[in-house]
Length: 211
Image 1 (tube, rainbow, N blue to C red):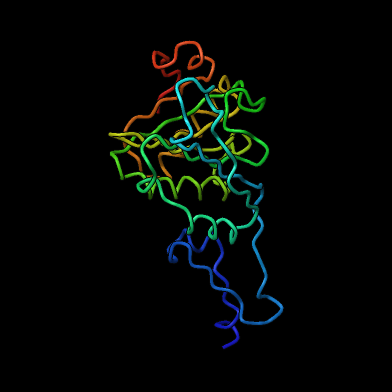
Image 2: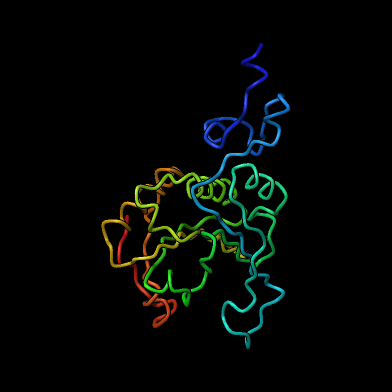
């Protein structure tokens, strides 16, 4: 009986098969407010397509939505926001380590790059959730290299990109790319583009690494 009353669902247990977003709290009064701190605090950012214009500087419409530092706070936010399939075309939704802005100009991101996965329109919801869980659960061997992730919603497809900080560190980037594919059971080849290349060449930028 005592074991049943003191059952608490942790982030890891939810990942392994609990109901997504379900948190079961201790029924003892001393544990009702117990939370499970994450190693890092994370911030959700949203780039509203209605706030964009061709004249505006890139990134000027991105705004922080909420910063969380516990597993419970993550689920509280996640369960009350639109998932990628429900976002408007043109929307960009980010989750980055707190105090790192999802912009090339941020000092932490400046020398980095990104891995990108592509999905049919409306098909990225589960992989977006699993990417977030891998980030906040510190599942990557080179977790210190991770800046954050973004999902881009476009007319015909959705893309999830994983931003890292030291693009030239090939060993770290390849490890991150391989682990990300494993976590999501993603079978297509993915490529890594340096931010510097993207800034100079835009869509002509080539993948430096592939896994």
